[in-house]
Structure formats: C-alpha cells, structure tokens
Length: 549
Image 1 (cartoon, rainbow, N blue to C red):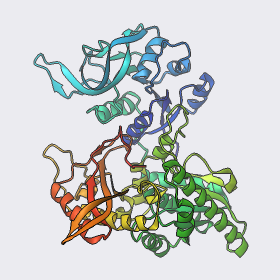
Image 2 (image 1 turned 90 degrees about the vertical axis):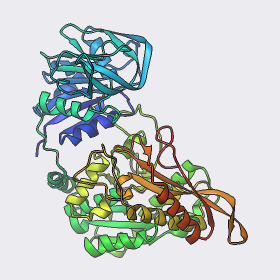
Image 3 (image 1 turned 45 degrees about the vertical axis):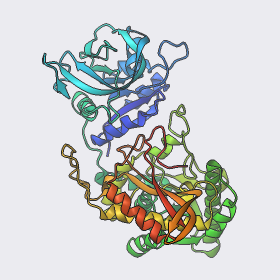
Image 4 (image 1 turned 90 degrees about the horizontal axis):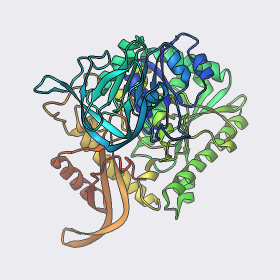
C-alpha cells in the first residue's frame, strides 16, 4: 500500500523524533530526514505525489550564524503546506525575507501565548480564555533567538510579552510557524495542533494503522531476505519478541531464534520465553546457557560503558558460534545470512544513530548502531522506524498476548545496567527476587485515577503496573546496618525505580502510594535474605536517565 506522507526535516533537535511520534499517533505516515538534503532530493522525494506536507524541526543553533543549517529552498516551492517549529520557524522567516536576532529575554519552560488572527492552524484551539475574551494556549518554549520581522505575506498568529512573534502564518501558501514546541507533552494542545496541520491543512489520509501494516512489513521482509536464513537474538523483551513474531509470520522456518540466557534476565524469564515462542508460536528457538561465559568476562568490571561493550561482544560471540553450529549440523542448508534485531526508534535516537548525526550519544547497546563487522551477517531490523507504542500495537495484531506485549521495557544488557558497579551472580540472584516482588505488588495494587485524568479506552490503567511506563529494581553495591530480630545485620541496598512517560524521551517519577512502597519494602527485606534496606528513586528524566547505567 502506498501511504501519503509527511516529511520531517531534522535540524538536530533532541526531540525531533517526538514530532514523528505525534504525527504517527494521528495515523499518518512520516519520515525524518536530515535538514541538509539537496533541493534535488526534496523534489525526487515528492515526485510520487504522496508528499502532503513538510515540518521543520527545532535546533540548538542560530539561523544568523554563517555556517548554520537552512531548509532546502525547494521545500517552499513544492506547493505543499509547511510547518516550522522553533528553529524551523526562524529559518523559515530568515529564508523568506524576515529577520531573526538574539532575544534579550530567553524562554525555557512552560509559557502562555495568545492565539491571534483566527488562522486555520490555531482557530478554536485554546486552553483558557482571558476576561477580554482572548484565547490562550499553555505551551513549552525553548529558545533564546526570536523572529523580529515577519516575511512578506505573513501575519501574526501568536504572541506573548517575551516573544511578540510567537507564531506566524502565510495562509495563501499554507505556511505556518510556531516558536513553541507542540510535539512535547508540556504543550497541552500540542497533539491537537499537529493533527490540525497534518489531517486538515495538509489533507493527509489517516491510514497508518498497525493491523494493516503487517502485510506491508511481511512483504518487505520476504523481499529483503528471499530464501536466505535469519538468526535473531531473542531477549524476551517486547521489541525482540515482536520482531521475532513478525519475521516468523513472514518467513517461517527460515528464522531461527537464539535465546541467550546470560544470567542477567528477570526471574523465570527463560522459561516464559520458551513457552511462548516454542510452545505457542512453534518457532525454532535455541536456548543457550551462557551465564558462566558472560559473568566470567564481566568479573571485576565496574565501568558502565565497559560492561555494555562486554555484553555486546559476548552476544556477538554467541551468535557466531550458534550460526556455525547450525551450518555444521546440517540443520541450516546454507547457514544464517542475516541477524535480526528488535531495534526501535528510541534506541536509534539515544545511541546517536539517527539519520542526522548531530544528536548527542546518551547510551550505547549491543543492538544499536549497526552490525559488528566481525559477525559477518547482514542486518535485519524490521522495527527500526517504529515507536514503542506502535511496536505494542503491532504485537497485539500479530497475536501475542497483551500481558506480554505491554510489559515494561527491558534493556538489551538486562540486569547488567541495573547492577551498579561489578556484576556478580550473587547480586543478580538478589536483584531478580527483589524485582519480582516489586512488579508483583505493582500488578496487585489497583490504580485510582485523578478526577481530571483522561481515560485511555484502549489501554485503561487498572493497576499501578499499568499506570507506570517502566518500573524495576536497582542493586546498589553498598551495605548498610540493619536490625532483624535481636541481631545486627550488614546487608545490601536496593533502589526502586518507577516512571511515567508517553515517549521515553522525558519521564517523571511515579508518585506511588506510600502503602504500596511500604508493602514492597517489607516483602523484599523479609523475603530476600541479604537485603536490609529499600530506597525509592524520585529523580526525573532529565536530568537523570530512566535506567541507572
């Protein structure tokens, strides 16, 4: 199926992919490409007639600098609507005859703007109304520069005291620009604004639906792989599980899953994975007991990045060994030629692997950034352009159990990034048990929404597990003094972590009920011998990350 599409040009903002996610939430297909594509590339991209609009992202740069990025001029000559966001607004202004300069007053954080001009983009969209009847919007600002002169043909669309031109529009050409960021959740009506642009102003067909996407993805996998065989690293997490189910739907027994039990999995994870994929999906799965191999190489290593690299390296070694065994045994006719991974968009973004290389590297995983050369396999990543919520929708459509699909994310290195400092089997065993108690109590505790909290009809928050986006336990390599019975103890400490987020780019710590925290703490200390203190992490992202390492 040929989808109508929105082109997002990335000027290097850390939240560019949030724009894509919001557009996808409107069931409209979109792609992100670097801002420095050529005019010829833009014209070729639009040549099939499916391009319905362009969005220009934000950036940390200033448009008046000599070496700053600009939008390809062809964008403004295609005859399709264009939306500029933050820096995107500024480069639109500068390129079309306006003027931008450094502002005396910077805005970073929540702000209010007044909508003006009854433009097609903002008309009727308000968060509040002043006594004079002016419509106001609660938005998120992040800028030091500002437009001081609008280009010819533009009219004022939004303003506030700090930014007199906070939005502008040339409705004849359907060019719109806003200084604020509608893609972040702090802009209350941001989703509505973006939907107004892509669905009404651009007139795009809302046909990006995961249930329908399966046939397209299956066709692409079959075309890409042909008759060759695929080996997939099955972790048990949502991403690798959905990737496995999708690829198995496409090529059946050409897929062999290698499930590596590296000693850093959650409690009983291995058995659950085998029951699902072998017992229910009838896929070929090789379970490799590699605990001794991984923990042996991790012994004495405490640096987080070094641990990640070791885990990645050993995965490569296991895959090489298993691929070789498949060929040698005759179970595989020609040996695996492809390595499949459950890489998704947030992995790519936070690993600095987005199409635009200007993003800062925050984390590195063994399953991000391309296939290691020494593996000698081609890379198959069928979920690489999907966001987590899309992956979950796809998993349900593929027939995977919702309880499995909507499990909280589990990192590629497993408990390796949840054990601070050196990794030991003793620590992993303690952490597994403590984490299982935490998750069990989250699932057992009913969630009572706030009076003004919107209800998601598709995925209602029934328990605190449903109400948190990611929850887990962290092992701290320190001991504290405690008292049990009449004796003194000197045992380990764990930290509970639970966050709420819609995009995993930013996250707030979950305000769990005290009674729940009390019960979890009591159970862990009483049931997991070796732990005598439980703490709760109340830091948000940013400045912290969701994982501790």
